[in-house]
Length: 215
Ligand SMILES: CC(C)(COP(=O)(O)OP(=O)(O)OC[C@H]1O[C@@H](n2cnc3c(N)ncnc32)[C@H](O)[C@@H]1OP(=O)(O)O)[C@@H](O)C(=O)NCCC(=O)NCCS
Image (tube, rainbow, N blue to C red):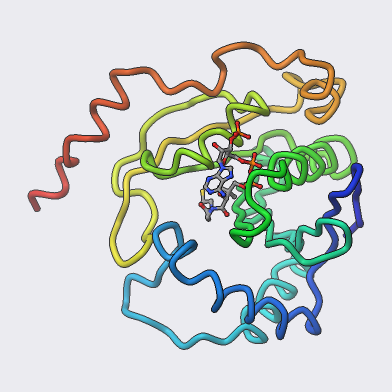
């Protein structure tokens, strides 16, 4: 796994000695992160940062994940995970991320997502990257809008977040849409207008509970 940088922002592979500082951030940012955090549908599991890092590293060794930390001026700002990597005829993966509240609004996430996407497409050779976001998460919707991830649709009760199955808006890019790179396209102001904008009909639909809510 590489270390990739642009200006003051870097992404680098997570390591076991990140456990302490990560745990500090996760605890200090409980209320900032809770609403958006993936949870276990079978009930709460213990808070084990070293265990989570080990399992992320095992996924990396197995070729199904790329676990990064994001840094701002060399300080740990958050995490970015490329996960669910499928090879072969799918050649696709998913990106998830968070930053500590004090680093919010400095473009740490969009720059990091762009760096990771370009590496995954043009060095690793994957074809498609997906980002799924809760309809209520305006800051995260801005991240995909900035980079021009293309809106693909509303997935009902898709991921278990903050204690329940939550609807998500899903966005994706395929490599041939961004031949010169996602970072360059954004920096040069060539992001196609409206790509990451969710149609009003889906915004309205997301306000209405999904059919499975009745089961
Ligand atoms: C979503 C998130 C990762 C965005 O990261 P970021 O590095 O702040 O991204 P950006 O700098 O591009 O900011 C995105 C938007 O957040 C909003 N924002 C900026 N500062 C903020 C702050 N202090 N508090 C809340 N929102 C803020 C702005 O609308 C900004 O858009 P703008 O740059 O057009 O003004 C971050 O808000 C976060 O970690 N949230 C909690 C966890 C989470 O939601 N993870 C993603 C799950 S899909």
